[in-house]
Image: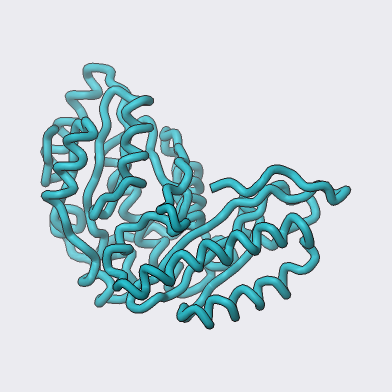
Length: 295
């Protein structure tokens, strides 16, 4: 496995691989890797000749400076995991390599905001930062296929639209969320939860499962069920709760003809903002139930 720290060397290495006609898979990460990331690597390894992983804590997608400073940096441990997973290239640049002219003068990419959570100011900042760094990374790596988990649905839809609208010739692969036995979605920030918060955190997924059951049984009672779910999370110690049920394809309000809904959840627990989602097959117009919710 080769670790590359500069865009110049990465470009040269990618050009060499392209000359050899290799199929390149790419997994962008911010490090502090867990089994969810390794599941992406495993799938990428099965679908491509070369697997490239970036490890870069992107400052543009952090609305709050203290969140950026608190984010875990574990590059050595990450590289050990990636080497065991047979990754070919790791791009681990400094901020100055990705943004050589500084953040204040960086051209930024704005994907038209999706509704619901994406209309919140912190989400617009986060998704703009994600779109910007993805454009840079796509231009450098030039992958044939890119892999993402599905726990952050607004991010996934943003990247899907980015690839479509900017004519990137890149396939987008979605891998189901990997969860702990408690149901908590694996996240790089979970290591920052204290013991009490770690015990409370799975309640977010439990509330989402309850909402999923409601959608299939009483789709007309969405508003009431959301209010009850927010109250439940408040009692469990969560704050600044954002909980929505939307059409999974565009994050608009669920419609009569919506085939799939998505429950979008984000909330602060201590100093960590947890993000999760759950896809649910909608009942058909006759009211019969479809399959159970996916990951």
